[in-house]
Picture 1 (spheres, rainbow, N blue to C red):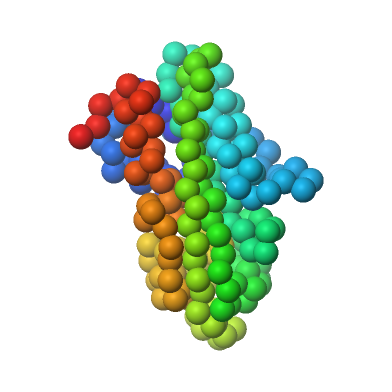
Picture 2: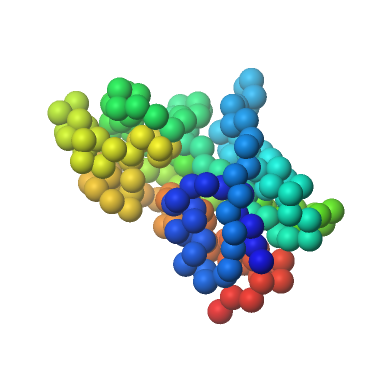
Length: 189
């Protein structure tokens, strides 16, 4: 059985689409960026750190860690946590393009890690403070990098999404992950 090193309801829902049995375990990893760390590297490092932290408690089992880092002007954007922080993030994103680095890592005991990463670009339309407030009141995406839920009303904030995997922006790139799970010995259609 697979272990998901995440308490994210979004990742849990996405992984359930693959119809594999799995358990969930909290990774308890410091998610702070290292000084000068690029957002793409941060996503990869955290995905592996989460997988390894949980793997220590589940010997003999494959553990999946994942992380997503939003990037604006080369700087990571975290989860806003509050309405004012989400308002500021969306104002900063207005009319601009953000990049979302979504990484995953499968580990098991001493075997080499199997990892992957997706890059999704989101182009925001021009947003005014009133419509941002209206959106935030409706969806309250305070636990989402970038302050939106693309699978919900947040889709109305964009001019375009550029990606090779639509699930990556939600939190887990299932197309690449499916291939990695097959490589690890899991049976998928």
